[in-house]
Length: 391
Image (cartoon, rainbow, N blue to C red; front, side, top):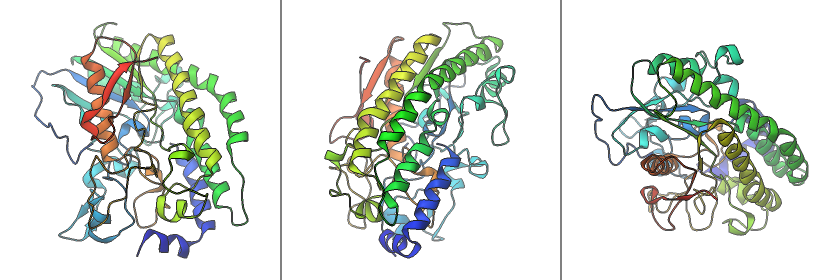
């Protein structure tokens, strides 16, 4: 049964309802290719924040509409012996809470002599990270991430703490869900960009303040754990664009093949707005927050250029074309969560995307403290990312 048949049987109205529900949830190689046990006294790199750094969608190695053989070998949770999938193979116990910390999350895809700790959780806002006295709150059954950081890193060497935050404070998933809902309206919707752009502009100042406050609490937590400023790197990163602009989409014409085959159900105007305006505006806002807090900024806004969902030059895996980092999309396509994974995994970095982000962070930490932009190399895999000074 192909993805196309399941969409037609379930109906567009069901997808629209599922996409709306996704807004409430918020927003790596099978194992890293250069895996080696770190030295027992190696310093720690810790990740904090939301789904883009927790490793959400790391279960998937590319995208496929072919259900046989674990969705054409894209499902890393699939066991060919039992012909069953168990997401715990990728997300461990964090799958039960919905934090979805994958085994190939960004910090686990580093190729540095460090130990890695991933405290990030899918759906987290700044309040899930900040210290309790500053509004930090338990999230999905866990204490605030800054409180966890203090407890975990007391008496431990720390090389860096990297943070991904702001998308859920902005309501990014609600905005994208609204755009999709317009596309799949049975009697015709309209582009979301005009109204959504206004909402984004109203919310961005709050995102900047929330991110800066979060970084301040991370610094406080580390100081309480015995780490002086300057003894570690603090990095705030932005988000890779999950979608290409309309001119680079594999599915021209605003037809339902974008939904039934590609997993990118958006109008041209919304695709171009999201790629050209929304993601860069979020990135610029986070850069300002990093400067406010005295942190490094790692710009990932164009790191997946040409590797986004439905981008020209990429393809879905099938029995004749297994997934590879050179040919596959690096983002999870949008699914209903029926049969093929979870809805909350949609439009998040997959296995190859996590590998790429791990390479970006590796390159950044190998350089002196500064702001950088990361990009991929056309035709190459996730190990061939490049780093330049941020503009």
